[in-house]
Length: 172
Image 1 (cartoon, helix red, strand yellow):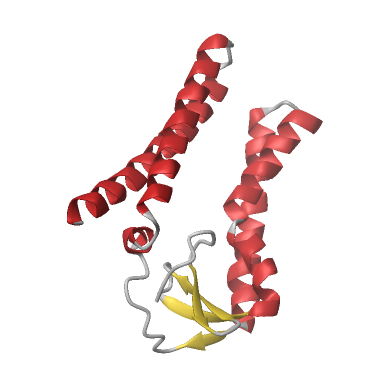
Image 2: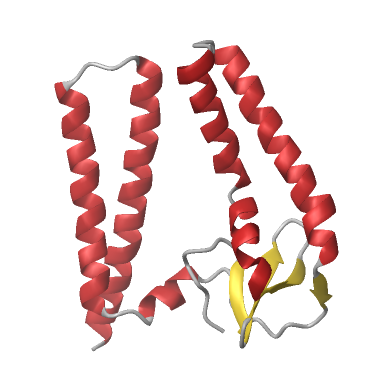
């Protein structure tokens, strides 16, 4: 079974249906196609909490404590809603026959090697561009740390794509 890398934990199951594998409880839920967009939004609840904190910090009150409390509160409320309201209305699948749910590399190996190389170069070039931008302008240390985290994530994705590309190149 192939994994759709655009959605975290959501896998195609049957025609018009997808499954969500909850890594915390080790349970697989059947997600209908008409409810998939709402589910995708709720699956990025951590990002929604961070965005709420950033918007509150820059638009309402530039206070780190209040922004952090708001971000954590939004995340906790969304997590409770996701776990105890949304997941309860989905059907639980006992034995979905899903092999290698965590294996991102196998899914990447099915892509064209040229696309993997383009993605790797894109990640590396964007991380170099971000570092160059960081060196030109002087930012506070909090923003520098956040930008460095983004750069490290881009480098990680670039290395992942590059390693799969090299593996495919060596096997041919």
